[in-house]
Length: 197
Figure (spheres, rainbow, N blue to C red):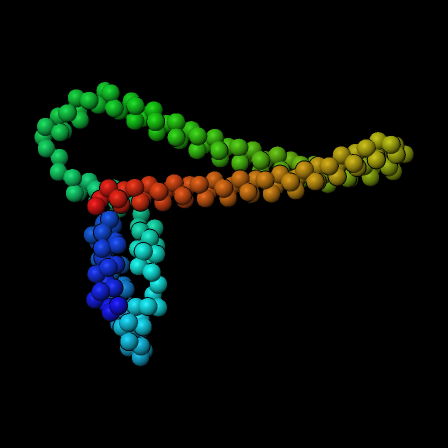
């Protein structure tokens, strides 16, 4: 496949992206192919080294912010005066429903991060309690209260183990929440991109 065919197929694959971002991506790959050809390779070899067009298009769409898709979608849609009147008249119905749905989604998101923050807070408490328990056990042992010192030392070790476990649990949960957020934004972007076709 030569440069012209590659760019044409890339443009087709990027058909859902906003026009400005689509042109930037095509210009970038056009210049990249030219640079590779200047280094001594043929157009076909340069194109073959770039990878699959679908993968390139997906990566390019991932780089485009969601707001660009929304703006592009709004620009493409022609709103008639009748549509505006109908939107305003139906706003007592759709506005509260939309706000309620947004509030539910936002509260779920905040709840997930509150649980993650609680894991980190409990970890911090356990991590601080373990060395303090060991110090307290030492004071108890020096004062002659050996059974209580052994009990407090054992509790401090349990706190240390629980702190390590909670730290890994908190980090794993935070990473999962970040991945879920990124996945959701990617799906939203591709949904908006498909709607722009």
